Image (cartoon, rainbow over all chains, first blue to last red; front, top):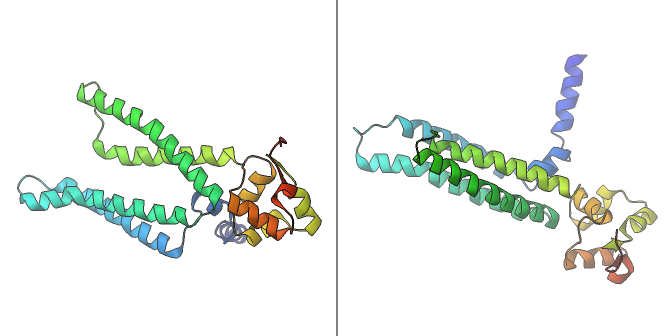
Length: 149
Length: 66
């Protein structure tokens, strides 16, 4: 009985018109899911491999390993841009407001953390900036969504 | 901006989702317009007016408050 209820809930959540899709992933197509998953996987692999490269490796390989994650992020940004282009005008406005809020919060915050790191007061790995940006963006999206509810 | 969208939709017996589908926008957009939290773009306002076969001024009142 519980399994049937759980199945029913999952089926409802994955339904074509499920509300969460309208919120978080409006405009997302099947191609978006496939490409974004591949980009995410590539990013994690590139970071994992890049961290393990020591100075014994040729310079060209090290430069490539350092740049691949940035290229993957650019790919993800392009993908997000195309997804947002597929949404309606209100959603585009919400994305714009969320983006501006993310910028307004993340630039001073990450600058302050960077300066504190430079001053030796706290140590924050640079790689943490991407997940931090993602979290701020998700919070900003939630705020923008509530504004027009 | 005040508008008569909810009344017009009710007259036609459409749900927000029905109207959203006819206008190719999300249900949230219809809800935000009806509650006065969002003013539609000119193309969308024209599409709404065309769908209900009336002028934009007959639906949207720039002087009124929601």
